[in-house]
Image 1 (tube, rainbow, N blue to C red):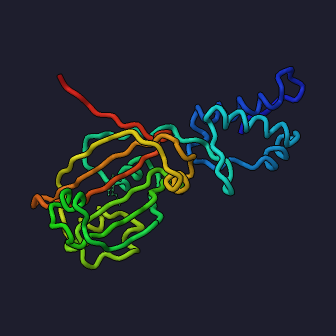
Image 2 (tube, rainbow, N blue to C red; image 1 turned 135 degrees about the horizontal axis):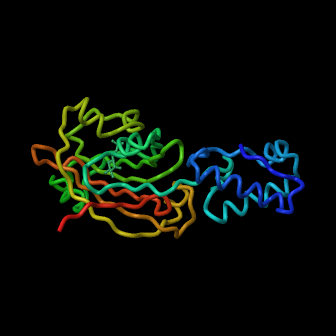
Length: 242
Ligand code: GLP
């Protein structure tokens, strides 16, 4: 950790602020890192908590740190740059960035397919489908909220615990399904109250909505998923040729 000079004309809160900022920029404090509490900082530097609070508040306002209710203050993520090439799963994307993926299951139910879901899954209306709602997290921080549908006939024995880890791993390893291709549409949207609560953001914040239809090698649709990615954490890129 950096040091501060008490006899310097530079205000102490500013020295702390700059010290933390530099540690983030140099990479010694990584995105998602839980910051010491105000009390710990004030003991370490032997300064008042008010001084520490001012530094932290400035860093939060500047987007360097994020406060999470009841959890503490974390180093903010730089936006994920996710390639649009390649049909990867959430878990693969996070592992590729050295982060640990996890899921919070919001609901898991079986229902009859609506017209829209039936069209996307190329099944008959009224055929049974799973509706799976999950918050997807990286190192414990919510990144996306996904609602996906798949025909029950593809995985009749699908159980809750499988949904806490990778659905693609389950499909490929346990069910021997080969997810081969897909189609994605990206749109901008704003968080509803329910989505905002799940993603720990404010109602109305920007989201990137990705609708994915993934298809198996036998041309049967595997899933129809609507994923809402936090626009403050994600950007998508694609390589182009002329
Ligand atoms: C991405 C896609 C979803 C897909 C999910 C599978 O997030 N947008 O359509 O269902 O990956 O991820 P996992 O295998 O980690 O469950």
